Amino acid sequence: MVSWRSVSAPPPRPDGSHHAAALIAAAGSGERLGAGGPKALVEVAGRPLVSWSLAAMRAAEAVTVVVVAAPPGHEEELERLAGESAGLPGEPGSFHPIVVVHDAARPLIDGRLVDALVERLASEPEAAGVIAANPVSDTLKRVGDAGAITATESRHGLWAAQTPQVFRAEALRAAHDRDGGEVAAATDDAMLVEAAGGRVLVEPAPGPNPKLTTAADLATIEALLDG
Image (cartoon, rainbow, N blue to C red; front, side, top):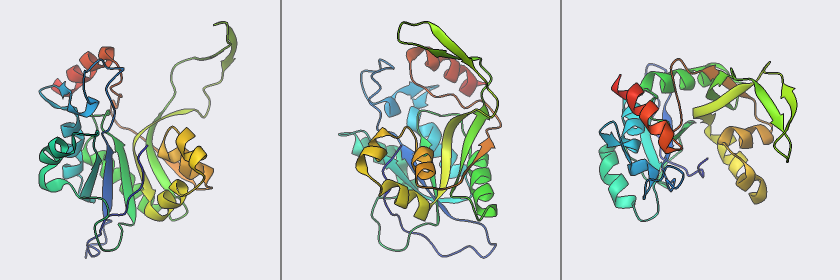
């Protein structure tokens, strides 16, 4: 989850396609990964992790500006990696109507998924957001404090949330302007928008979209990227 900042928007496109600003969350410490430094800068399949997400945003036709939430003390390094594709928080001008929020720890996305989410949101005027997700396939067990299973939960209607998550800018801003404790407890931006009364849709991710969290994830993700 990233804090909302306004970014400038270019004029509408003559073909009616939709502009979006992308916010890449790349400030993770990498502690669980054992990286010894920021997760976003860990080498994954020959490139810094965040570079894969930057490339996807460059490839997305809808994205016209990118804002990266950088690890403290590594702002200049992230700026060099982002190059001319990166925008800066608080630029003058009007805001983009649509915001794409993505966790740099999910490097397998591509521009086509980003564009599909933006277009889905644009086609659903009553929706505040659309997120990449997939139906839960594992059997779910509820476990008590003693480590014993207390129930087996139905998977019916359960989806595992991923990123990118795409929102109308007004809905995302309003969700982040709510009570600070509620914002701090949220595990993703969709949760905040839902709590604020926004209707959030799911869009199936067409391919694998795992999150790099531990060292065990690294080999799997590198194999998928190399493939």
